[in-house]
Image 1 (tube, rainbow, N blue to C red):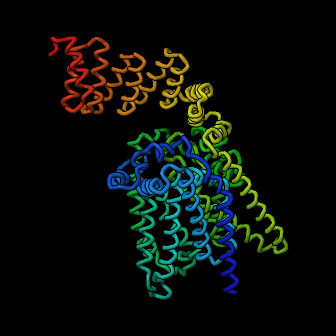
Image 2: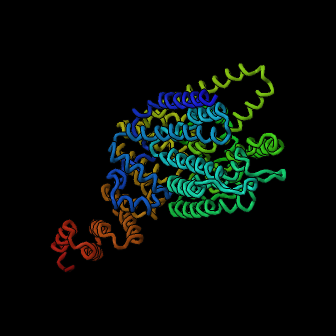
Image 3: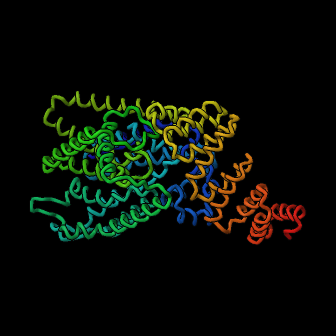
Length: 577
């Protein structure tokens, strides 16, 4: 029997590997996309130049992209060393991590529960569900598959620790418990360094202590003392707390935290939970970008709250007989907390990638619940197997369709605009995709749509302005460029770039305002002093221009362009010497 079970396990692993590789293989022929891939890889010099001392230091100290995830940056640097900017290699590594995560999930569930086929079904749903396409097919979402890899290694190490730790029954500890505990702590730390969403893992450790490990009971036969259960997780909670604080500070400093009322955030969270559940059961109309957070009418919010309360009541009533329901439900709810919008980060109301870990809890509920139902209806066994097979085939078909949208940025964001017609991010990025292909007419149209949907989005204001310049409408272009400059007045780099564009179009007063903002933010920026000097000279303010030239040369004596322009100014106006 043991040999047959081992054969079945090996066969399942082979099927999971080859089917997952087959369905996702098209992504290895896809290019990078325009959303985030540029910032994470293609236009990031700290990444494209590979691993070196400077880049490693940058990875551990930067808050770029409003996150602290040094291990993710390092993984991208390694990809660039191996594949340069060949997108196929980057996609292939994402796929390898997804396959590895599938196998690790299978091993964890089978080891923890002893249930091979149920574990295999959960692993297959994880591998093939369309909701997970975004995490695998998007190079910039390396942080998803990488952090989940360490998440699952943590669970496996914890499983090893729990099997060796002292219990009230034996009073003894097995060999290797300390090493297993240390490994779990290290893997958790590596997960936090890959994506901060894994901060919820200590709570999941408590959940799996209840089921399937059975280290928590409420019938008086507690195998492990409550004191030990809590003390052994203190280190994990400390790491999670530090990770949460660092993440909040980095996101807040990066302007990613949106200030909205608590009531609105809670309402959006309730609706988002129900939308996620709906997409697990019917994963239609999936898109890389959804509409901005909007919880809808009071009736919708009340309905979502009522459904969440009903589901919670059902699992609480059944938790003694079916503890997997409580564990799966709390796994799903809890691991979504960092991204559900209670702390609103960005404008999105939800994202498919956020379900990569949380969906596992829901899959456990579904599979174990269905198996228990079939256990009391043995006559339905064949029907049950056919139904499960049909679900998996349906997932594979819908995943294949979803992967097709990722073949290029135009296809991806055209679909996103169709799914979420009021998403200004989707409209703006589709405009960029059209612009890259030389389709300036459609680019202008999409930029105009993005500005109409959200006038306070500086990127679309800037892109629309440049498109208007190209279309021969400089007057309207200047207006939108002024709006972009106002919206980004606290970013020195962007202000400087905008000032240069104003100079190119002889809008010197606007250029002066931009360079003034730059010098308030970075008073030792020699190039900005030079550009301000040129701007003042064009405005006829020669004495202040001379002062700016002198400051530029003081800050950067080896600045030949500034010295040449200054000498030209002094030649024309010798009284300034």
